[in-house]
Every structure is written in C-alpha cells, then in structure tokens.
Length: 332
Image 1 (cartoon, rainbow, N blue to C red):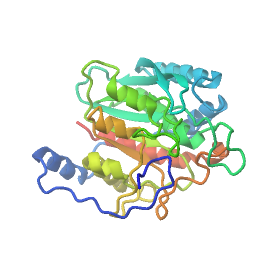
Image 2: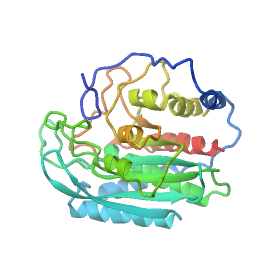
Image 3: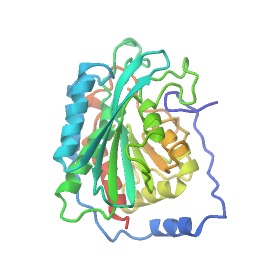
Image 4: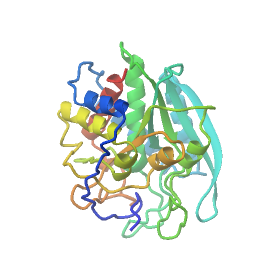
C-alpha cells in the first residue's frame, strides 16, 4: 500500500536500520545531538503564534485562485518584510490533477541571507478546496487552521523572535511558504504525489536562487492541535535520519517528550512537501507532522469543515516552535 499524507494509513512499526557504514560527518552530527544544550534560544510567544494562525484563518479558506488566497499571500509577504527578511516571491502556474490551472506563489523569507550555511523551515500556506473527509459538508472549502495555518503561524513567530533577539543564530534561515499543496486526490490522481505538493515540486525543480542549496530542512504540518503528538515520520528517517534524531533529542533535552514522542518506532511514510525537496532538490528535510500514536491517523477534523480555530492550542504551537528554534541556535 502506498502511504501518503492524504490517505488514512496503516500504522508502521518498523524500526529503521541505519547503515554501519556512516560517514565520519554523520557520526559527528549524531554525537553532537546527544550533548547538553549550552546555547539557549530566545523564548517564542505562544499567544503571538496563535494570533498569526487566527489572522490567516480570518481571511477565509486560502484556496488558490480566490481573493482570500491572494490577500493572505500579500499579508505573509508584508509580515516577513516587517520582520527583516529578504523576501522572494516565486510566482508560477500549476495544473491540478483535474486540469484546473492555479495562479500560485511560493513565498520565501531569508534571514541572514549572506550566510553560506543555510537551513530551510517550511510549511504550506494554502488550504484544501473541499472537505472530503466531512460527513456532511464534503464540497465546502476548508478553513485549514491546523492543516496549513498552524505551521505558518509558528514560522512567522519564529521570524519575529529572531528579529528581536539580541543573539542571532549562526546560520542563514530560509522560511518557505509552499503554495498549492492541498489540491490532491489519492483516489483520482495518478502521479507520484497523487496531486498534492504542487508548490514544493515546483520549487524543488526551480529553486528561488541559482545554485541554491541548504544544509537541511524542517517542514511543519498540522502542528497546532490540542494534545498533538509528533513521531519520527517514515520518509524523514529514510532521507534525513540524523536531522530527525537531532530534533527529537533536542525536544527531549527540553522536556517536551509528550509532544515529540520517541518510542523507538518509525511512523508512517507521508507524502508531504518534504518529499520532493528530498528527492528532487536533494536537500535532506524532515517532516514534523501530527499523527495518532496508535492508529497513525491525523487529527479528528482533518480535511473537514471543522478544521477551525477550536483545534488550535497555543501550547502546542509554542512547543513546536521552541524546539525548532533551539535546534537552529545549536547550529554553528
């Protein structure tokens, strides 16, 4: 069975076996991940992250080719500029699995743009055009508070926090808001990504700067629900196990194991925006994504008309953002 983000997938309990023939660099990174935190990142404001999620949702469903989508995109560009980012807007036309042409924008905000060592932080900013998992309102567009807006809200707050911090991370950061992620259909689309991830596919094949590369990337998806749990996702452990282990070790050191659960088992492999970044752009990227520990399912209101602000918990946003920020500040 092909497991992906848009299917209710079976639970995988397979433990990823890491080759004993690791490079010296990989060994050094894994050893570093076990060290005690010595550089403390500044604190993210949970209420501010929550407000950024709410502001996106207030535009309405951010479905490409709609006014709400255009206005929200303009808002994200303005906020990144306000936070001192060098902003690049990558406009493109995407064709959906059902033949609809979308006017889309990947939005990139760069912090410390001249740094040679770069790390990508990403989330998708569009929302789903129809609530196919809803028991009643299957044709209604999805507000996408958790599935989309939560990751963007965390990254906006992270950018604001870094801008105001006295000490900056020692690396360059590229915040990428991928567009046109959520138009797929696992039952009808026949491409590798079953119609999803159009923006990340485009960026991976047409990076925003010639010759661009990054040390690694972290994708945030559905990172705002109450009681959310994040386990090491299957493709993350296939393509970027060192990065996944580093992030989960950092969370453990911070006492956030209730969110970043490390049971020794690998979760399902989820088709998400990190997959083309790994496969096409050749940049190792992990996915921090909420899945149920036992069933592997997503949060209860996934792809329904009820994915609204009632799903969002500021404490979850804070936990995810703080772990990501701490990971950045530990880089050299």
